[in-house]
Image (cartoon, rainbow, N blue to C red; front, side):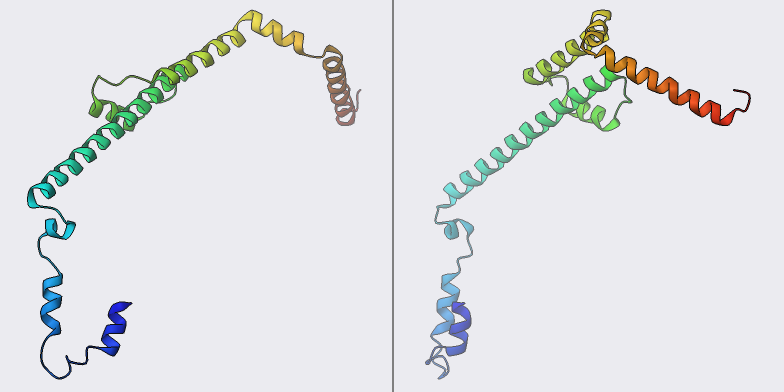
Length: 159
């Protein structure tokens, strides 16, 4: 915005040709990035090294998290007998053997497994039968039999 106003109004002496305005613009833009940041050369280099190290650390943490997730997906695929994913296998190969599934996720998977084992057992099935309303079940069965009988009578002339 200031550039636009300055170019419209301009410096009254620049039109005369005394040449005072061009030198100030060249001095205002330093070519050294350290001076532009207000640091010495050594401070600037140290700052750049620190930025690179922090970025590498963040990337390593990110890859580790991705490998943990891939490990969990592989475990779940094995558990439910789903097809393996090539992408997860590649992620695990890149991460190496030091990847473990986080404890919270293991606890969640174990809880799900115990619940499913309880449902699959004979006692689990018996408990499901106790929770059902037998009267409602009998009514539903008799309604289904009656419906099948009426449909059969409509289609069959012998009955």
